[in-house]
Image (cartoon, rainbow, N blue to C red):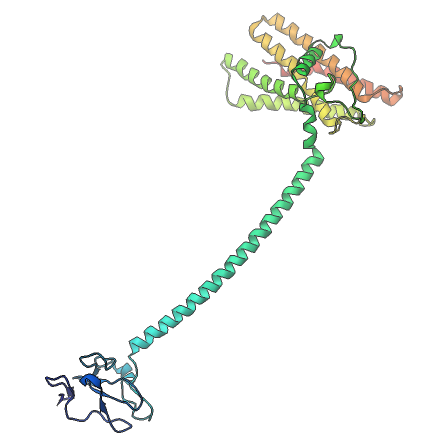
Length: 355
């Protein structure tokens, strides 16, 4: 039994409450809880609290009596105080339990809000990604159309439809153009021009491309033999060769500006003119090779010969591009331009030759 101690209630040896009455309540009575664990308030079904020494309330030995604690701080004693002023009041739960429950509830609400926010962010990111993909596809489509309009990619296939027989025959025409008799291009049944493998007079881009790459490598090798090689040689040599081709193509287009040329291959006359201008690198490569191993006099003679061959080829090819027409003052001016382009092959050969 509990004996009343100074300032509170104490337990006897049997762990029960003493015969002294518990603290007064609003309903006027206390009953002893099961297991001898102290007094409970059965009228309202609240857990019993035992008053410990020092004025606090503690649980019984069996732990069924509820919360126990030491004397709370002065600012929290109201939560443990007996609600004598309210008839239906009971002892409040400890502040720690209340705070823990509140924190758990707020954490759950935060988790729900975070999940909802994360889902909305995922949806927004997916929509933004789809918009970016659609916009990128639209830009790529417009770029592809613009490139095809400026330089049709499909037409490039025409200039590479060739075989070994065409390459050998074309080299013969370029190096022995005086023996070639027919310069007219063959046509198909549909009215277009035949592919290079079926027409020796058709322009191609395989020989100009390969001869241009070989020219750049030969110039680098030639300078390396003289001890003047540097990595910048490749860029400078390529720029020089491309500059010559660009200048000549512009002059050709200017010569035909006032006179329409016949439709050629599926890509227009521009690539034909590029091919005709690029054929000069075949002669330049030949003269450069001979200049590496032959005496200087022989090298100059070969360079002069290939310049004549290139000029004659350009003259016949551009005349065929122009087509047959009556001699008018405008046509005569065009002929002068074609002869000037043929004569400029000597200047181009000198400019492109290794030094």
